Picture 1 (cartoon, rainbow, N blue to C red):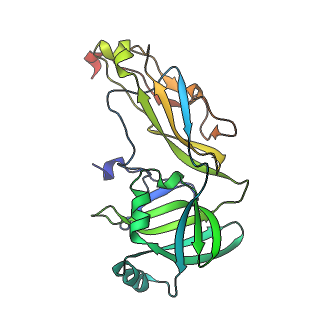
Picture 2: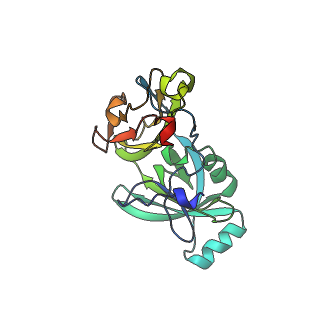
Length: 239
């Protein structure tokens, strides 16, 4: 079921969570809260996160390659790399428990970290996570450096509330969800935690588009405003 919901992101540099084999990219596969009964709203609210960066300790990797990476995992380390900001890539390793703890919050790919590599600090954001295909736990992480005023491209999850206030759902309609996330470009220190939509007043046949989102200052969607997020409740006979 998880594999059937996987997304392949076509543009390089977009965040993703990937099994080791095959390399399928599917951000926030099962970690994002996705209510079944309720979705978009006429009024929307965006929640922000990350007033400060989260510090993460790391050490340089003495060797690279598959054999060395397997050895690190046996020692309780997760291999990774830091790249970007016109600097040379840096091979690192981080504590497995620390990475897993942040990964399981469901916000790993929208969290800015201050990675401390033996005293040298880099402001980064995770861009790709390779996960074990059986355990679904991280086995490799790619971090991208983020400048002080840099903007990044991320997928922000959508949450739908007030299902009981939707006339369409009360009449037995079902929701036709098109997107569970909205891709935006935003400042690295002001990534929205989620976009929240109320279903209050949503009737059968009403569609909701990205233009319904009240974007915070400095945040803009990648897709056109007319792109659909939800097709609206369908009549019971069309289930």
